[in-house]
Length: 229
Image (cartoon, rainbow, N blue to C red; front, side):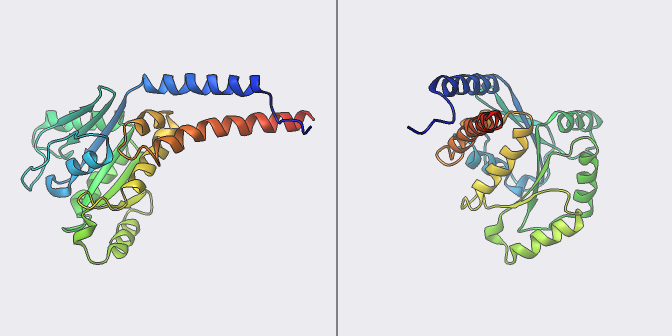
């Protein structure tokens, strides 16, 4: 009989260890900071992204003028922030604090409007000084003509420093791409499983990331066993 790469006891140990790691993740908290015009579709995006309505949709076009928090199961907090040059200095200081502490910063651009204005570029640079875990979310691509050119324009003007995710929160296009980009960043802080368990697309996202943890441990143990032979 062919020898198994590891015993049932070893596999049970791996599973228990990874289950403990997953449970540890589930006890943590995630802070996601968002910035962008009110009509960039931030609320509709996070509602599509997560399992359930998180934020109220229907704000009038313009700029966010106050800090708004949306909590999901008291574990995941989305913060919609005004710009760093807010006339209210207290808002600006609080906004900068959220950017520093955020696990992920979602920087929203409107594909149907003016993409990457001078003000947006300046704000992006300011945020990068305190947090480099930034995703540029190019929303409303269903209302844009040449999405590829828009993405290239953003990349060219940001020195390819950030992932650019073109999505449509209205149609749901590319939402899985946004999910995976967020999870890749959260994986560094071991918070990806917590996020995945509350995402709308559990079948293809959460299971994939949870099983990947187990697979990594199995592969590591197999390599150790091979080296001992």
